[in-house]
Image (cartoon, rainbow, N blue to C red):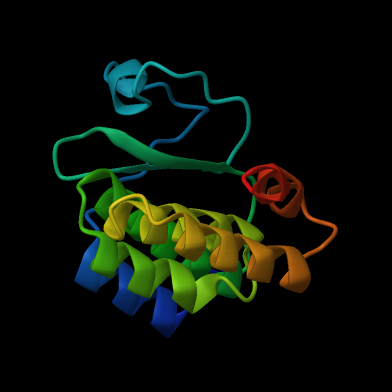
Length: 151
């Protein structure tokens, strides 16, 4: 990722504007590695841990990503952080911006709509049905199929 993804201007800009990052090398264990990894095992590199402003984990990704995939991950991580803080409009903006390529983002956009609308079941069903239509073979569409049982 050091030679392809991080030098990408879009990635550099997104990281500079929205993140505070640091990098740990798996082959040179730093004394603070366990704390930095939030006490979770790091089975493979790269492992990306996204936290909120208080150091709480909001997302984790394992494995190499292209620049476009990495940018989507950043948006999903930020959207997840906003969702956890109850900032549903901010969460929706980020999640919907990548829902076309990420079924997971579409799933969580439904959650944000549901919570934003004071448990608006119709909004949740509409978003999850869109997810199922756009990404029918995804695991996230399968998870969203519960809307069939919600009446």
